[in-house]
Length: 358
Image 1 (tube, rainbow, N blue to C red):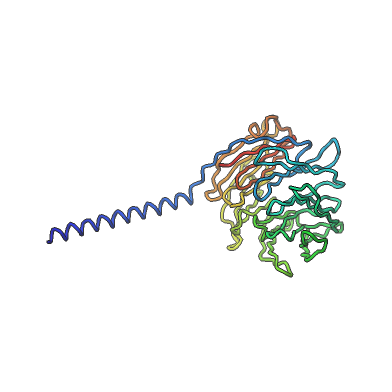
Image 2 (cartoon, one colour; image 1 turned 60 degrees about the vertical axis):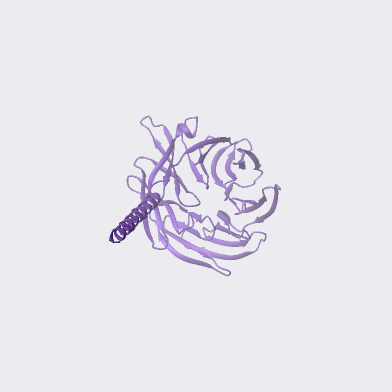
């Protein structure tokens, strides 16, 4: 009887030990998955040739479309080209603007494209039907725009002739302004969270970034972030994180800022001898992209796009100028944007390259 009891007891202990080791292994595996950088493979997709020098680009929220803003020298006017990223082909173009295109945006359902020009015009185009659904004459020049998550309202950052800058909320299908939020100083950059529920308006000269949300009757300032020497800011997902480009004495850094705790969570040194041109973050906030420019010993300019993991602050992969463009750049001005599945790099020689992130 005692032998039977001892055998059962030993088996129970062995089972408990195996369960403990298995549980510990599972915990260690989960910790490694959360800290280890994800494997990233970049698969080249189709390159798009634009009629003029590219000044900006923007993915639609779903990543199905890519809008490029450029200057067409033949017509001496701005042109916005919409590319079908899924089928890798040209979709349509928007021309005939009296002013220079200042901003481009999309509604969250990819139904409309918003185009603002320097002659204070705002046009809302139905992408599928190819008609200008609404056209408004604004009281000032729009320097930033986005639609809210319900797509019934749009937010505009305005700058008028008296050097006054303010945020404006209006209905998408109405010329009536609902709310205005003035700002002291001269805000020079704006960023929107992927779900368009929060907006950041920054003044690099004053060194502050104001975060706002929108209520039914007013705009609520939810916080202020000190951003000395910050050249660009984007939201890194919807989890209350900001990705900032900071210029130090000898290098550029990416700062991941936690809005709730009001502190810098991560610092990533981009390079010691490069100029940081633009930054982007994936909608889920796991990846970041930087576009830089550097000069060799022969005074030739080169471009570089790097992909970073925001969970581990590590460099995942990089693309040199030879990979981004077959033609060497004389003075590259690289811009990047990331959707949930794509990376985009563009140069000033009319060409856009698209890579699939896997």
